[in-house]
Length: 185
Picture 1 (cartoon, rainbow, N blue to C red):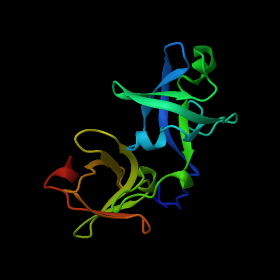
Picture 2 (cartoon, rainbow, N blue to C red; picture 1 turned 135 degrees about the horizontal axis):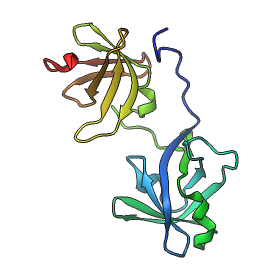
Picture 3 (cartoon, rainbow, N blue to C red; picture 1 turned 120 degrees about the horizontal axis):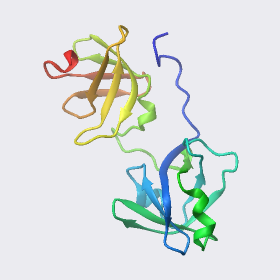
Picture 4 (cartoon, helix red, strand yellow; picture 1 turned 90 degrees about the vertical axis):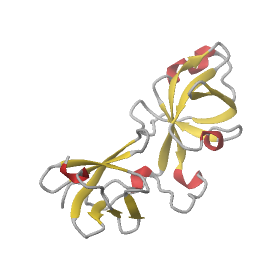
């Protein structure tokens, strides 16, 4: 099978944040949210799991209950219940926070998790096969799909409504209408 064409196995947990460093002396952590809904996922009373430095669920995956959180600069300051000193949280720096996928709110119409796009076949509206999605990059102004063709050529396709016309998660197929020249880059 072509690269990424095998059966996709959905994960049990999703990464929702990266712990940058402790903040202050009272057990707060500076977290880079890796979700569009940080207020929901990192809100008071929510439970997250501590992952490892690679984003996998750690063997020692402690359940952490959010006591409070607040926006800070371009991230979020999070305080977990029972961790009241800087020393209690210093070992969390560089690790990821995860949540069970079944504990997340339902996606809105037209929304997808990026992991659902990986391995999807990309075709043009005219039926031409472009390749398969290998990676999704979060960039501005639009996120990019890295699509690898069978001949090894790699295309970067903006994930925007102007170009992506249809996403069928179940069929693992994305239909695009690329502007002239996009696939020749």
